Amino acid sequence: MDRAMASINNGKKGGRPKYSSNIRIDIPETKLVILTPNQYNSLIERYGYELIQKALNILENWLRTSPKGEKYRGKNNYAHFRADGWLINLAKFNQQDFKDDINLTKD
Image (cartoon, rainbow, N blue to C red):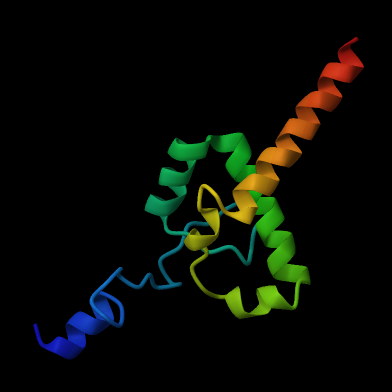
Protein backbone atom coordinates (compact mmCIF):
# COMPACT_ATOMS: atom_id res chain seq x y z
CA MET A 1 0.00 0.00 0.00
CA ASP A 2 1.39 3.37 -0.88
CA ARG A 3 1.93 6.12 1.61
CA ALA A 4 -1.02 8.28 0.47
CA MET A 5 -3.50 5.43 0.87
CA ALA A 6 -2.13 4.57 4.32
CA SER A 7 -2.58 8.21 5.27
CA ILE A 8 -6.24 8.13 4.29
CA ASN A 9 -6.89 4.86 6.12
CA ASN A 10 -5.05 5.81 9.29
CA GLY A 11 -5.54 9.53 9.65
CA LYS A 12 -3.06 12.23 8.68
CA LYS A 13 -0.02 11.00 10.60
CA GLY A 14 -0.76 7.27 10.64
CA GLY A 15 -2.75 7.52 13.87
CA ARG A 16 -6.36 6.64 14.45
CA PRO A 17 -8.40 5.60 11.42
CA LYS A 18 -10.90 8.06 10.01
CA TYR A 19 -14.52 7.00 10.28
CA SER A 20 -16.73 7.62 7.32
CA SER A 21 -19.99 9.37 8.09
CA ASN A 22 -21.61 6.89 5.69
CA ILE A 23 -21.00 4.03 8.15
CA ARG A 24 -23.37 4.99 10.90
CA ILE A 25 -25.95 3.47 13.15
CA ASP A 26 -29.52 4.71 13.03
CA ILE A 27 -30.22 5.92 16.56
CA PRO A 28 -33.87 6.70 17.33
CA GLU A 29 -34.67 10.37 17.99
CA THR A 30 -31.23 11.52 16.81
CA LYS A 31 -30.45 12.86 13.37
CA LEU A 32 -27.23 14.79 13.91
CA VAL A 33 -25.23 12.40 16.14
CA ILE A 34 -23.05 10.06 14.09
CA LEU A 35 -21.61 6.87 15.58
CA THR A 36 -20.58 3.56 14.07
CA PRO A 37 -22.26 0.39 15.39
CA ASN A 38 -19.03 -0.65 17.17
CA GLN A 39 -18.72 2.75 18.84
CA TYR A 40 -22.35 2.74 19.97
CA ASN A 41 -22.05 -0.77 21.43
CA SER A 42 -18.81 0.06 23.24
CA LEU A 43 -20.43 3.15 24.78
CA ILE A 44 -23.37 1.10 26.03
CA GLU A 45 -20.98 -1.47 27.54
CA ARG A 46 -18.92 1.25 29.21
CA TYR A 47 -21.65 3.57 30.53
CA GLY A 48 -24.95 1.71 30.30
CA TYR A 49 -27.98 2.23 28.08
CA GLU A 50 -29.78 4.88 30.18
CA LEU A 51 -26.76 7.15 30.53
CA ILE A 52 -25.93 6.92 26.82
CA GLN A 53 -29.52 7.79 25.86
CA LYS A 54 -29.36 10.89 28.07
CA ALA A 55 -25.98 11.83 26.63
CA LEU A 56 -27.26 11.33 23.07
CA ASN A 57 -30.21 13.64 23.75
CA ILE A 58 -27.92 16.29 25.25
CA LEU A 59 -25.50 16.06 22.32
CA GLU A 60 -28.32 16.16 19.77
CA ASN A 61 -29.73 19.34 21.34
CA TRP A 62 -26.27 20.92 21.50
CA LEU A 63 -25.52 20.12 17.86
CA ARG A 64 -28.90 21.51 16.81
CA THR A 65 -28.87 24.74 18.83
CA SER A 66 -25.29 25.79 19.56
CA PRO A 67 -23.29 27.84 17.08
CA LYS A 68 -20.19 25.97 18.29
CA GLY A 69 -21.91 22.68 17.48
CA GLU A 70 -22.18 23.57 13.80
CA LYS A 71 -18.65 22.50 13.00
CA TYR A 72 -19.33 19.02 14.44
CA ARG A 73 -22.44 18.35 12.37
CA GLY A 74 -22.00 15.64 9.77
CA LYS A 75 -18.89 14.27 11.51
CA ASN A 76 -18.33 11.29 13.76
CA ASN A 77 -19.15 12.30 17.35
CA TYR A 78 -17.44 9.49 19.28
CA ALA A 79 -14.82 11.84 20.77
CA HIS A 80 -17.54 13.72 22.70
CA PHE A 81 -18.09 10.65 24.90
CA ARG A 82 -14.82 10.79 26.87
CA ALA A 83 -15.16 9.58 30.46
CA ASP A 84 -14.04 12.95 31.84
CA GLY A 85 -15.75 15.01 29.14
CA TRP A 86 -18.55 17.52 29.52
CA LEU A 87 -21.15 15.32 27.86
CA ILE A 88 -20.83 12.30 30.15
CA ASN A 89 -20.52 14.49 33.24
CA LEU A 90 -23.65 16.43 32.32
CA ALA A 91 -25.58 13.22 31.61
CA LYS A 92 -24.49 11.78 34.97
CA PHE A 93 -25.51 14.99 36.74
CA ASN A 94 -28.93 14.99 35.06
CA GLN A 95 -29.38 11.30 35.84
CA GLN A 96 -28.57 11.90 39.50
CA ASP A 97 -31.04 14.81 39.68
CA PHE A 98 -33.70 12.56 38.16
CA LYS A 99 -33.02 9.82 40.74
CA ASP A 100 -33.17 12.39 43.57
CA ASP A 101 -36.55 13.63 42.27
CA ILE A 102 -37.89 10.07 42.20
CA ASN A 103 -36.71 9.44 45.78
CA LEU A 104 -38.37 12.67 46.96
CA THR A 105 -41.71 11.76 45.42
CA LYS A 106 -41.67 8.25 46.97
CA ASP A 107 -41.62 9.65 50.52
